[in-house]
Image (cartoon, rainbow, N blue to C red; front, side, top):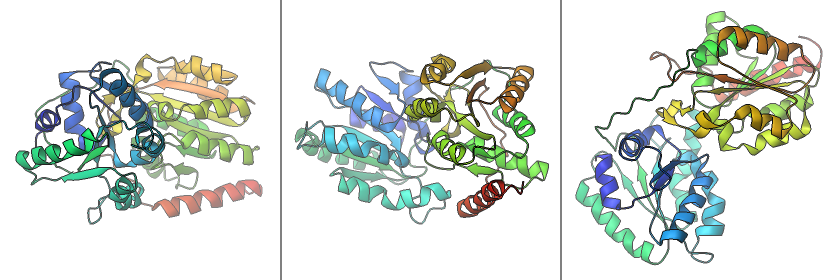
Length: 378
């Protein structure tokens, strides 16, 4: 089914969401048709943010909004769905479009496996009726499902289209790019060079994949790194938990702009606690690049000013290798919480691989290394 067809079947003129690779055709169509327009299409910071924004649209217009997301975002919508949208609270209807990662029987990455198993169950628990779109779903079947959804929406209840892998297609092509020269992988290579044997917590997506491959190329092993393959937006909080309990060693966090935006309150907590051994690096390409390159608002956000306002005593922004090296070395030698924003280009190697160790192995190796640090063995 074409993404344009699904949009026409739903018939809404307002979409908000967090991009997903399985909804790339839909995201590209919306970007091609609307771009970023607060009247018609907003890429929000997290899925709960989307639900609240869509609720505001409904309150102002009386019309039905659409929220799109990867199924990993279901956790972020449980609170607003249960305490805001539910028909026993404010009874606010909307349509969800959910990319089904980790569907049982379909190979996927470890962070998606359990989420895939509970995707439909969570919708059922939230009282959200759903229809599954797959490669064989016809336009008429989707239209019939939307017609049936009309009865639920008229009762001010919520509904969802759950989209299987490869179910949506579209001819809309959008070129996502910016003017920065350094690639994310180049930036991470510089970080690895300066951090030495210090522990690193890296964020969701290609950043962790690139860090893994850099370690492989350097024959360093992987015990230094905790690869946060899931739970987008929480790497910096994990790093805070490590830093306060390993105060005698520098702890590095490699974060992304989309992840930092998703749970930005973490920066306020870090700034309030001020661990003097934590170095928080946000690689900012202004894009949800791992899932297709759709823009984040970080391209127009002063991350350094936010860090300073949150209480980070040192915060800088760099966009070239020499300035990056200077900032990294100063942070390593500084006693105090540090924030470094690094401007990055959009894109990654076509042959970028994935970690060959399991998530459990990563955790165990990392904990063993942290324990050795605590005993003064490294």
